[in-house]
Amino acid sequence: MGAAGLAPAPATDPAAPPSAPQEPAPGERARSLWSDAWHDLRRNPVFIVSALLILFLVLISLWPGLIATRNPLSCRLDRSLDPASPGHWFGFDAQGCDVYTRVVHGARTSVTVGVCATLGVAAAGSVLGGLAGFFGGWWDALISRLTDIFFGIPIMLGGLVFLSMTGSRSVWTVVAFIVLLGWPQIARIARGSVISAKQNDYVLAARALGAGNARMLVRHILPNAVAPVIVTATIALGTYIALEATLSYLGVGLQPPTVSWGADISDASQGMQFRNAPHILLYPAAALSLTVLAFIMLGDAVRDALDPKLR
Image 1 (tube, rainbow, N blue to C red):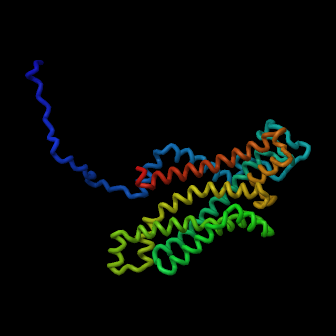
Image 2 (image 1 turned 180 degrees about the vertical axis):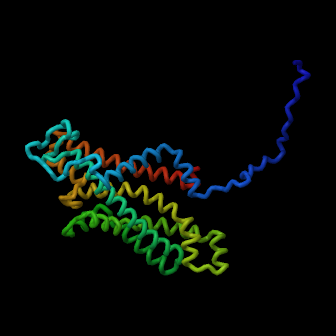
Image 3 (image 1 turned 120 degrees about the vertical axis):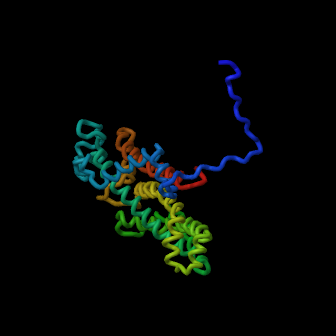
């Protein structure tokens, strides 16, 4: 074919306005924030890996007998510090307890403390901070000053003082302590989010149409202000698990017969026994690290999906 058969390419006018964005196809609905976030999460490998690991932790927390049939409190002193053997994959600790069984059963304590403390902190902080941001005035000033007071209490020092004065240190005692000192962070985030959301046009329109405070909070403000709270609470969950283990390691956390990774790490470090039997420290510490890492990874993935600035 000759050169005459080649049609010249159409010239583009640099002054011409850019083409308008394509409209959604007929019948196709625009995704909401939550559906768009779920669409991104399903394609995020960090979310998939962390979610699978957390699902596994939840399953063994609810039914530890699925993978560990022995009693974690059944110990044999004649097997003290014995290494791994068939049927006892992680060896024995200083008391002759099966380390594998205690690691599996310790997941229930950590997950229970983390989930319950996060729910309590999120509920208390969201209610107080949301009401302060919505109503303002003296209520906002009161909650803000109360938040500043609790922010001035170091959570680790508060745990040493608070838990050392309690007679029985159970899972629910530790959860109550975390909620008592952990709600200010969520309250401050909820307050700012509600203040930002209540200035939107749809809230002003709802108020002009006569909507009451309860309706505006539940129907208009809460769905658009809860995303930062969810992100912060998800990341904080792993922090609360590490906090419980730290308090147990220091001797003011959970008490026997409750099985705790922090308590097992503390027992392993006494007398430097882990030098001769490193397995008694390695496996509880690895389980704790993986659990905290999984929840932090999940929180990072949720933050990336819910934050429009990161898209």
